Length: 530
Image (cartoon, rainbow, N blue to C red):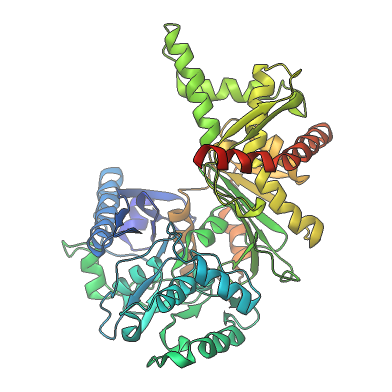
């Protein structure tokens, strides 16, 4: 059956550019994974700017595809020659400016750069809408403020996903979710906020540029739209052997936030997802826009344009991982070689034996600053009350609480200040790997049921493949919400845990002390780093 699907050209392909890996996933009409391939890459610091070269983008795109093609051949004994649908996605935001001939004017500036503080603050004040430093418009305005020579020559700006889509189709468009990382979106109109576009044009009117903002922005499309077809040049870029046929319809390119929503079935209002790994962020689909500006909350959209509030924290498990590594080193010093999966499982389960408020132990996991708590920089810090014994259960519980404490403070803005209703949240990432620990604590901290799926496919690459399949296979009038619920996730195994009131009360007590001692964390940064 799988072999026939591939041979007959009924499979859909998704490719996602992550920060360390480009992944290609081939799925059948039922969203089952048929083949995968990837390519490892790393950003480079070029003249003080984090970037990936054009050559790395082109090579990585092709290599990931060819590795997926080889996997399909190995699994099913069939050569991939045609597709039903295709989609690309990438880490959101950043800056790729092009001239009239689509020549890149400066090296790609990624989301990782924090070089647009002046511009982001000015635009946030102008729009009364939070503009993070990583957004494309912040990069553009910072280049203007810097007087960079390339700005007058700009005729198009886009994201990494938009550039990859252009290479494959020749179309200068973005999915609405990725476009929301270029500049603010009007969800009702389904495109950029016209008032803010006009305000930006007025802001730079005295510069005398031969373009206005609307002239250089990508077009905006919602999920389900056809965003072009694979050209002959695009097909050869993916598959230099010439086996892949052109003409495949391509869905709107999306950012990793949008594909993460799809991969966790969190695109309906009052749903959300929490990604908890090196960093931690929550995305909640809103019934209506927030009432005012919050600099701790990023506003993006689903792939269909619904407003989404994002609480993003820079650090989640890094400090926890460091302590676990120390404990593993102790085991090695005792003559044992521990299995790290077993170490994590044991220590996480030990945390559930701890006191609900961590018994007077306190941890700050800050490897960097956190906008939610107004900290510009960070150093990890562990402290305790003088009469609080350091037990292993309380110690591990404090580390886990610390990994989600800043997120909880950001989420309180939504649930308490804005009265945002949340029916369900899907958790994914390393913090949820040990069954029933991070999931139970997160549900209790947020006082919201948290679901963890046995699998979310292959992550964002699977998510963009599903969006491509939705474009190709949806019935007339079938919404993305219905498609995901009825065709993709209906049979997927998942477990939902409810909040535990005792843990909720203990977490609240921990968080009250955590908030009260934030000045100590800031003083520690000043003292340690000067």
